Image (cartoon, rainbow, N blue to C red; front, top):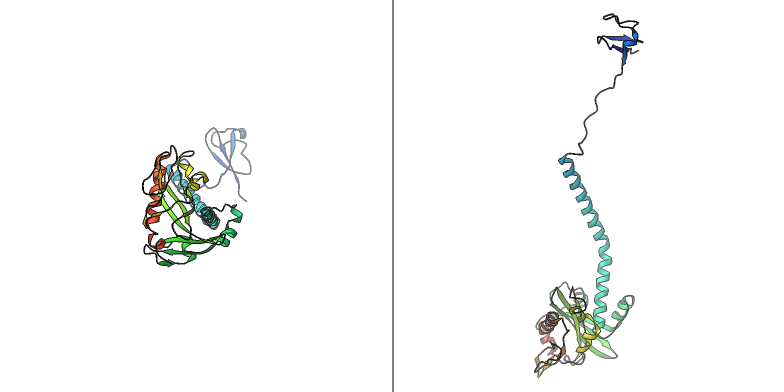
Length: 269
């Protein structure tokens, strides 16, 4: 059985036994001058210094990695829902271009009812993609959506351009004469609210109905002019007051986008 150790506080003598001696054999100090030595065991291993720069860097790096992984997993898990919302928004825009406004919940059913065909064409007006590819917008080409509205065929074409602060896009539909506008819808990435952003309102898009995109067999498009002005030799609509650059962007978008459809619009398909 291990014995205890007692140290003399006067001279430092160490005594081993069950209790302190009655007196120190070295300095004759009484037992009251002895104190027990308590063994604390092996010293603990030194851990990481949480106040060190190394710890801060490692901790920050680990946290950044964990957050990045979490965001990536969340993004991937939400992607199917995001894609579904994007597709539904596209259906709503296409439907608005033929003057049909429905709720998001009704969009897919109404789209499937009215859009009877869709395909991609090249600049020669030749079909280069099917209905699914036209809607997906991932394959090179220009999408055409064919709608039947009240028994009449309408052709819907995609528009892409840029405004004051970012991208502009939309759809424009024409009657079966492939010249008279039946409807239009415009969207934007970040035009100024109350000014350029007004292109996304029915008040602006409704001005295009009945306008002609060809004059004497030549593509003229539809000019977007300052309110009170006119455009000689082509149909035109008033632009947005205070949204001059956005209006000019729509004007360029219409001409440039429709120019890609000229062969399709001037040939029998």
